[in-house]
Length: 287
Image: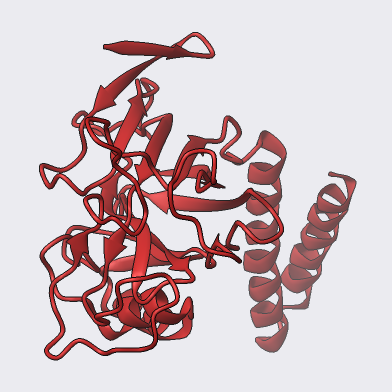
């Protein structure tokens, strides 16, 4: 089945084999290959009483937290144990512990950039975040707590923004289904804290009655959606910016030579170089 959005064909993908994983769409990629791209993610809440059987008071999603990374690191996934950062995010909506884990991996080189944005639900039904992603770290992991809840969350994990031919994908849409972080035994949105002992692997909640996500004989309904769109203007260097950069380098190089000539007593050469520097600075200020 092929959908059409703004005259661009969308191909439907089923997501990971795990039945609780998100479904998503990918738009055919642009033909050019670049080492980096700029994207805007729109985080949209779909959690409403008109669709779901169970919606608690004060329902919302915490601020987005994640990062761009390579295949050497996996931050979370179905059947895996939650890290302290994922537990903290899923139980409280706090970003700090997961952010520390991401920053540690930035230092290690597996992760390139931290992604941190606002949440949705209380005051707005959607929010956006812009970021740059590089071909050396083409995967995205992004999460948000389902609130209120014991330890439930939505997100994506290790999704590649480059296709099999090394080209950036223009648009990706991820329909987000609920997950249990495995750290709290609570069974309702407002259950008292009941730490799991021992902690359990991350699991899908699409068959959980708490949400009413799957009425009989109906497909799962997403709680939220991430829409990633590659921005048309990735801010490539203009001819002017290239020229400015070249002039700045020349000025720095000639200024250094002029200083060395003056130090060696070569006054004529120093004067000539200083004159060139002055001329280049005038050209630079005119741009």
